[in-house]
Amino acid sequence: MIKKLIMMLSISLIASLFLTACQKADQKNESDTLNIVATTTMLADLTKVIGGEHVNVDGLMGPGIDPHLYQASAGDVTLMQNADVVVYNGLHLEGKMGEIFESLTDRGSKVICIEDGLPKDQLLSWADDSSVHDPHIWFDVSLWKSAAKTVADQLSEADPDHSPYYKKNLEAYMSELESLDTYIKERVKEIPEEQRVLITAHDAFQYFGKAYGLEVRGLQGISTDAEAGTADVSSLADFITQRKIKAIFVESSVPPKTIEALQAAVKSKGFDVTIGGELYSDSLGGVDSGAETYLLTVKANVDTIVEALK
Image 1 (tube, rainbow, N blue to C red):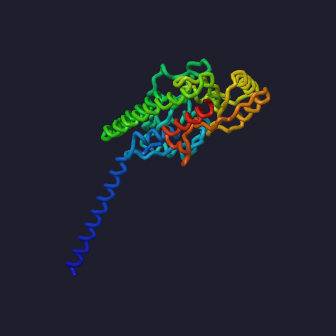
Image 2 (tube, helix red, strand yellow):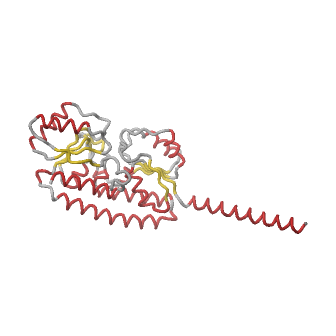
Image 3 (tube, helix red, strand yellow):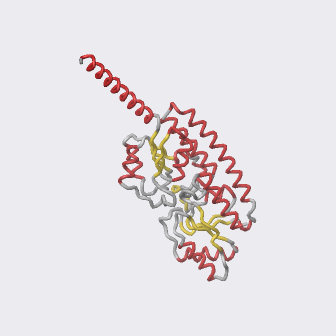
């Protein structure tokens, strides 16, 4: 009886030790993975590409969400407070979340601001005000390379054990971005020079225009928080009519009513302009859209623009 009791206690002890070892292993596995919160779909995608198997990424904003107007919920704040790393764009893109990022930084959280890693001389100002910069930097592939390097460097700092892995992923991604840059330049050449004018709902494509040789006009300003007035619509309608622009574009994260009003205003002036398609401006495409990643989204935009204007 005593032997049987000793044997049972031994089995129980072994089982307890095994369970403890498993729990420690699980804790180690969890500690090997950085829990990251990224604000936009572009940054969530970028962080997954660089972080790979060593990160778990939650995106605050889904496809079609406008970051200019996004207001964080209490759940969002808790998610960011519990994260190992928070990644955000900066340049006032997430205009209603500034105080949250300041609070996270003050409490010692690891916060990656893409703005901090961008070459300041390549940032575009808005409305001749050098203190306000255009936040839509992802439409210039060279600036997105800077964003990728910033993420890789900061993840390496947060998780030095896996720094070689992050740097290897960065190198592979840089090669893909080079190919994307070449693709854009070759496709834009298909548009007659006089038709290289991109007109959209809000002014999100200035970096794209500067990098790839298109004149860009937005009906609203850099932020969708601003509204287009009747005078704005009429003035842009005059421009389209005079230049005989073939197509204008709606955006996935902006209601189409402003572009539809512009199309009607052009028609009232005796010229027909088509809506050339939907562009992804402030977010990537959704599931099964064919534009679920940054690379696919930019290609989809370029293809839509070229096919409508060439």
